[in-house]
Amino acid sequence: MPNRRILRLSGSDTDSFLQGLVTNDISGLDQGLVYAALLTPQGKYLADFFLKRDGDTVLLDVAEDIADGFVKRLGMYKLRADVSIEDSGLNLQRGTGPAPAGALPDPRHPDMGWRAYTVEAEGDDGTDWDAIRVRHCIPETGIELTPDSYILESGFEGLNGVDFRKGCYVGQEVTARMKHKTELRKGLRSVRVNGTAPVGTEITSGGKPAGTLFTQSNGQGIAYLRFDRANDDMHAAEATVTLDA
Image 1: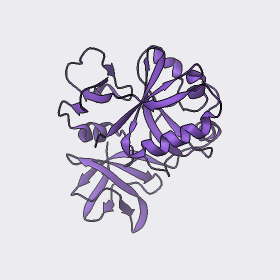
Image 2 (image 1 turned 90 degrees about the horizontal axis):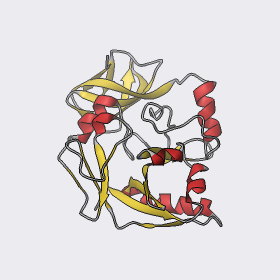
Image 3 (image 1 turned 45 degrees about the vertical axis):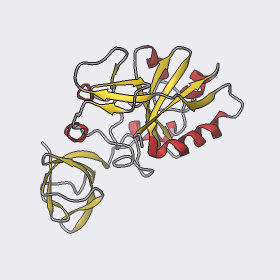
Image 4 (image 1 turned 120 degrees about the vertical axis):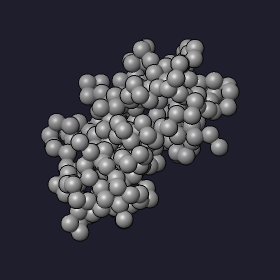
C-alpha cells in the first residue's frame, strides 16, 4: 500500500475553500509546494499535507493512513462550495539527489530534498528519511503528529507550516493565542538516546513523567517533553535520554 494519497481539488472555489481552512497561506502555491495542516476548532491536529498548483487544480499530498477521514472532513466543510475532491491517479516520488523535471523542494527543510507527482509507482531514492527527520526534529504523521498534537508544540513555525498573517482558518484563534500570549511548556525536541526504546515509550525524570520518546536514528531521537522536567538525566525504558545540544 502506498504511504501517500495524492488528491486533486478542482472547481472555482478551490483556493478560497483551502484558504479558509488550512494553517498556511495558499498564495505560496505560486512559488512551489505549500506545507500546511488542518486543525480542529480547538486547535488540535487533524492532518498535515502538501499542496501543489497543477494548472487550474490543486494537488493535495496526504498520508494514506488518514486520507479517508481527511476527505470526509473536507466534505463536511465544503457545503455548497464549487470544489470537487477526487483521487488524482498520481503517486509520490521523492529523493535528496538530483531532482527530476517537475520536482519541487520540500518546504519543511532543504535536507528533506524534493517531491514529484507522476503516474509511476510510489518510490524514492533510498534516502534514510528517519535520520534526516531526527536530525532536524521534523515530525511525521501518525508518529509524532497525533490527535493530541498542537502544531506550535510540533515545530510547524520552523517547518514553514503556519502563517500568522493570513487571516482566519479553523483552529486559528487557539494557535494565535499560543503564539502571542503564552509560553510553550511542552513540545518536540531533539534528544540523544543511549540504547533503544519502542516508539511511544514514556520518558521519566527523577521518577516523574517527563514526556514520550518517538523516532530514533543513529543515537538521536525526537521526544515530546515537558520543559520543566527536561534535563540530562531522563530515561525511556532501558534507554538513557539527554537533551541534544
